Image 1: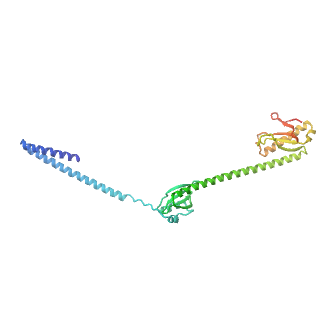
Image 2: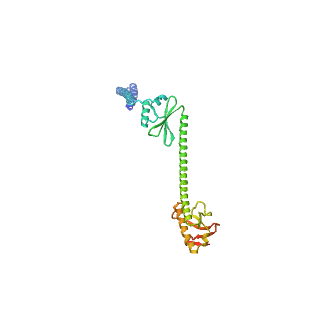
Image 3: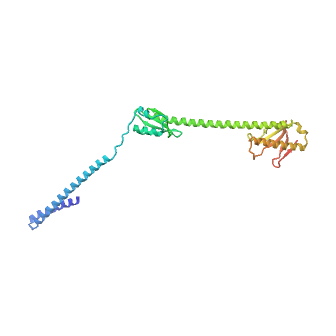
Length: 296
C-alpha cells in the first residue's frame, strides 16, 4: 500500500507539470493531462487514507493484545519476609520435612539457601526481618531450629557443624581401632595362656626331663616359628635311639601346640630344637630330610 502512495504522488507531480507546460504551448493536451493529474491525485489521497487506517487498526490490535496478556498472565505472588516469631511459630523441631515445606508455603517464603552441616545433613536457611532462621534436616525430619542475626553467623554455624561431625567421626574411628587392638591383645593373651598350659602339662609328663620350652632367643622377633626345648642332664643318660625318638615325639607335640594356638599358619613349618640348661645344642631338626640330628 505504501508503494501505491508513492506512485500516486509521483504521477500527480509529473502530470501537474505536463498540464502547466501544455497550457503555455497550447498543444491540445492540456485537458488530458489535467484529467490524469486529477486521477493521480485521487489515487494518492485514497492510498494515503488507507495506510493511516491500517496503522490505526494495527495499533488498536497491538493494544488489545497487551491488555489480553496482562489479563491472561497470572500475577506472581509476592514473597514476604516474615519475622522470627512467625517462622518459629510454624517451624518446629522433630516435624517431618514434608510438614516443614508446607509451613514455608503457608508463610509464603522460600529457603534463602541450603548450607551443608556434614554427614549428609543440610541447614535450610529462611530470611527473616531480624536475620535468619536455620532448620537442620536430614531429609526426613527437622532435628534442630536456630536463629542468627547475620549471614556470616549462618556460615560459621555450618562450618562449625562440619568440624564437629569430622571430629566425631575421627573419635569414632580411633575408638574402633582401640577396640580392635584390645580384642587382638585379649585374643593373643588367651592363646598364649592356652599354649603355656599345654607346655606345662608336657613338661610335667616328661618326669623331669624337660625343664622348659621357650621361643628361640636368636629368632627374628614376632616370627613365633622357632622354639627351644630345654632338657635336664637326664638326657645324657639316654641311649641314642631313645634320644631320637624322644626328640621326634616332643618336637611334633610342640609344633602342634604352636599351630593350635594360632601363632603360625597350619601349612607353615615350626622349627623345634633341643638344648641343655647351658644352652648347648643337644638335638637339631633336619630341615630337608626331616627327623633330628642328635649332637650330644
